[in-house]
Image 1 (cartoon, rainbow, N blue to C red):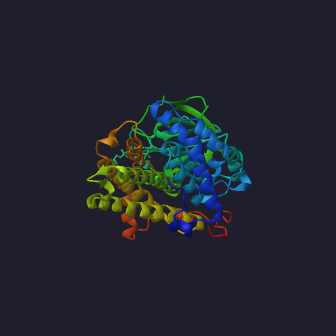
Image 2: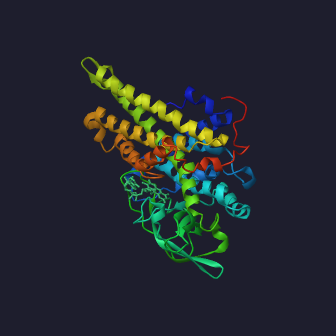
Image 3: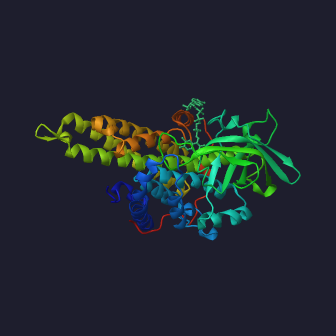
Length: 413
Ligand SMILES: Cc1cc2nc3c(=O)[nH]c(=O)nc-3n(C[C@H](O)[C@H](O)[C@H](O)COP(=O)(O)OP(=O)(O)OC[C@H]3O[C@@H](n4cnc5c(N)ncnc54)[C@H](O)[C@@H]3O)c2cc1C
């Protein structure tokens, strides 16, 4: 697969980004690719080694400012890492991105003291996080959260269950959103975010259950039974958990999922064109048939558009420009077009696409996993309709001040 920098991304990438791109490609080829077969063969096992190697490179601290030991490289850099690793293993990229969502929430909402306590460990690779929002009944409806946190002296006591929590097995601490107000209080005032260390008594991580795809990545259940945390584990204001969760989903989750879909999309197109160029037919090859060329052309058009959407959105975020609609669009169309490409690729491979040892069936399975997280397609379209109808939904990206050390350096790639 090509590791060349696409010219369409030049406006968004600096020389520093270019180096990171090459570093991510080299890492994916040398460390990730050799483990993919093993991960596929053992879907019941959680992949820890790749997480350790990424942690050792400081990549879980890619957005953490240098003052807290991080790379301070920003959102475009984060997208590069997730995108380039996802081309080789979406499961490995999912491990990275799932921890980067709560890291973003800490950067935006934690106090300086809390950042000093947690961010250096994240940047140093000894602490991975998860964000625990989704619940068995409420699903993606944050206002339906039933997990309760109640005060007990100087502590909070948390009880409830969370499901589909990315990195639930790898995380040393979970950013848990729980209800802290009486019924009837508006969701925008009723929820609070808490950092809950994985070894707190009463916290149980359910056994890993393999999913359709993303083998090696764990996204499962957490049960909290009267888990006690001190007051200084509240992240953001009490009652502002909805803001922590929604800003995390829009500013970190959506671009991360766009990058994951993009990596898968590229792998699908590469795999399919390589196959069609060598599959003999009528004295030539399948890629010479006009009807097949039309389908390849469609895949390529969507891939190019998805790539620009994914990078343009995070570039705007790094610049501090309001860009919620761009982030949402990149996630929504990035998944949709990648899933359509994977389906078309299956059809264009005929029966060969179904071969259990062939890469395409893994890509097809993995892409099904980028629809639900960080807002389903329905949710993205609802938010975009609000934008189109000038209903002025909250612009979370407006709350983020551009960090000077994230701003592009003046050297073009
Ligand atoms: C790979 C993966 C990783 C994940 N990681 C995390 C994580 O780290 N942390 C976390 O908290 N969660 C995580 N999730 C969960 C994810 O956020 C939820 O799956 C998502 O929010 C949707 O919830 P649900 O699956 O329960 O579907 P539901 O919310 O039950 O929705 C079911 C269907 O109804 C539709 N629907 C729901 N509400 C509306 C509405 N108002 N209008 C129209 N249609 C609607 C949905 O679009 C969907 O099609 C992850 C999921 C996956 C697959």
